[in-house]
Length: 158
Image (cartoon, rainbow, N blue to C red; front, side, top):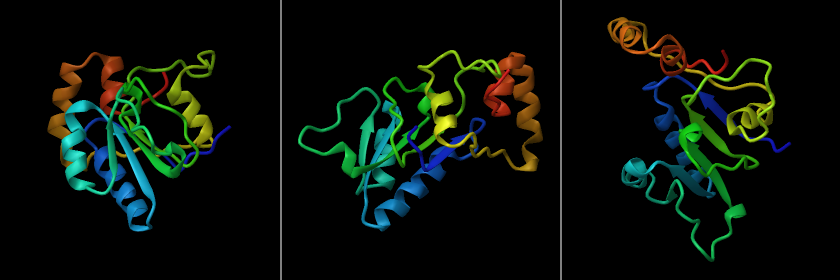
């Protein structure tokens, strides 16, 4: 199994993209090439804060003539992307798209489960500051229980 560098599965709006950008900038500062993959609407913002990185919209081809293996790869909101690869030394962050059944590893195509395995069963999880109580109460009222667990508590397994 390929070993990855970083895996962050956290609730929505907890700074996942900002953390990935900071990690990508650190790689650029070391003189490494960076490819940052994200959803379409975020590409201009990421390109602005990482002007020396190659920022690729999910589903768009990697530029011809470049060696993909020469890049350190970053995938933002990977569980929502259609074209994610488990890459050695890759950096990954997401809020889970759906809850997985604990102990059920039958889906060999589940990238999130592959990444947890590639990270040695560990991942980072961040939460909001303690003063987010009002938002959490609103979200609890708005979301169905499983969606609240996944989107607001950052849970992966049911």
